[in-house]
Length: 303
Image 1 (spheres, helix red, strand yellow):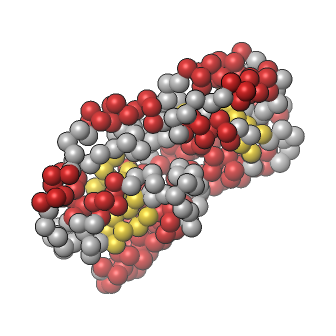
Image 2: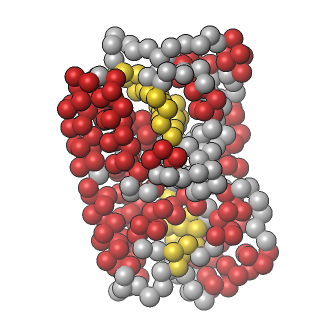
Image 3: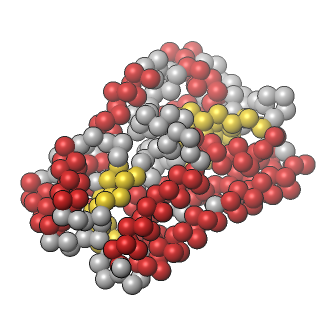
């Protein structure tokens, strides 16, 4: 997703924080009217924090525009100040939103949760699109309840109840994944091609296997895939060696567009996904819309 959104990201966030950070005094984490203050790097993590903290806190989601690429985002001085005055910071981690780690140095008393490293045992270099792992949001909700309870012990039951309710609200996602798994088990061809590793955790949970790791890694790292790799993919698409093709529709790549067109021309199903939360959707409706597309593809194919 890096190439397409990089310029727009720079335009939106060109006011950097270097000057602010250099002159920023070591601010202690504070509360607004005795409320817990939370800053999350993305809106889908901010959504979890809002659900758990409820009316006992205030949550700022830094990236809440689907046109902004989290890989290349540069925070403004306003955001740097928000971070410095937060009690809890939530980032994806594993190199996805490293700018938060820079800002977190000015909030030494804040609890800094890196979802990848702290909750999922991931490290730099691992696939960073952790929100597509169905285990991520429940783990984050419970972890936030624990940290909020330390800040406001008298509201522990409230936070835990909110976390439980939020996790319960995601049940339909897991139900949809189970439906997909049931069909996938009957599918002889479980290999799929992807334009980049955005949807990989979801595919794994659904019972499918990514068959073009070299291509997806090249795309993710802004490297041109080799002609040999592309040739192999083209041949396999024409010969229906894959179950379907997944692409990130937020990215405009000639190579990917050509492969998508080839797949459609040869009646290979195509699944369109996004890396960031679309406007007007919640995490739940976002995930469900994509899983429902996937279920429709594989159930139709199996008939």
